Image (cartoon, rainbow, N blue to C red; front, side, top):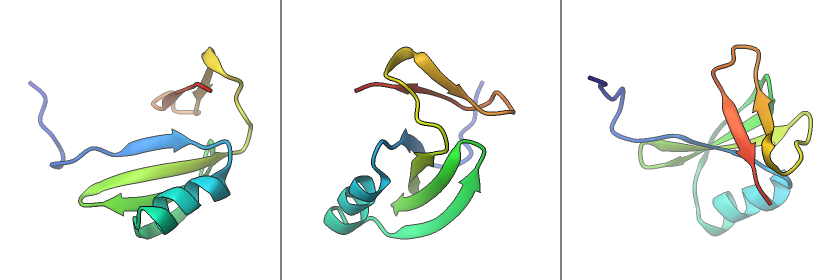
Length: 84
């Protein structure tokens, strides 16, 4: 049986326009920015909602659209599907 590490879920979003995404989540919705880090896929901006993190990722390489445009980091633990 699985056990939750915390009582929330984190969401990672690969952004096509990081400035527009930060404007929406931070400026309009009011989610506080709790950190910016470099990840294997690009720059990750973490915004907090309760105990959940919304991770906005400005990718190093822009993926194409569709299910075949899968991004894999070196550890193979992160997978993202990009849709337009």
